[in-house]
Length: 257
Image 1: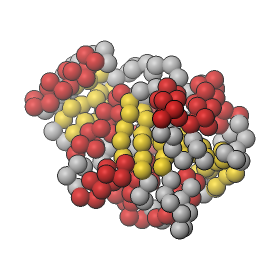
Image 2: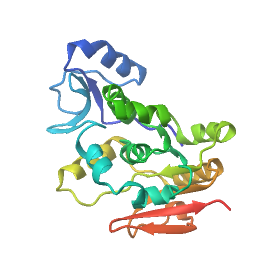
Image 3: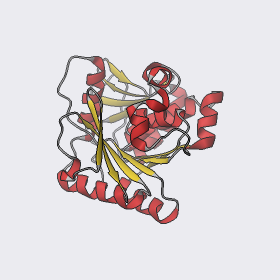
Image 4: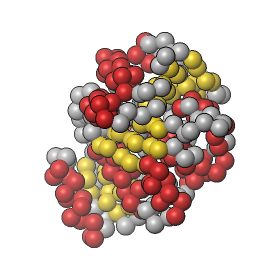
């Protein structure tokens, strides 16, 4: 996968105590640094954590409250479609999972809360900064500490390169992919958050999708799972071995014989 263009984003700091961290991040990734009130897509190192902001829309990853906590409590446990897709089965050892397109780590957090050992890969340093900050803020929570002990880590970098290294050392049972897909609804606040990420990351390309899926299939010991919107074409034009459907989502399974 080619390096992501860090477009449409500036770094700012609304908390004086985080100024050094914000300036270091801006220098490291060659991003402009500006005052918080400048109109732009901003990565704000604030007193509330690291926040991606576009006007009044604010995006912060939180593993202890909000959507993540709700899904952990009411998502359906080990019987939910996501769990079945990655290979969680009654009476069987829990699979080890690499989420190679971690994004905001929502699905990764659900799987980790079910007991899976999770290793995440996120190519965008900006999105990775949101997740890393959420991990830091949740560090003192006893249940989250248990998840970290079992395995809940983040690598920032090129997913294809990192998958190749993992395949040579400690390959997982399952590689999970949730590639960026255009969202058509534009009214709900959660969709606005996704629009902000699309503005930041841009769409993937067919040849990149094929390289990513092939790398995932070479890495996984048992299966690759690709999350798709219901009715979407097969990822990278590769037909899955099996499919698990929900009302809005489809999990395509590429099972190794």
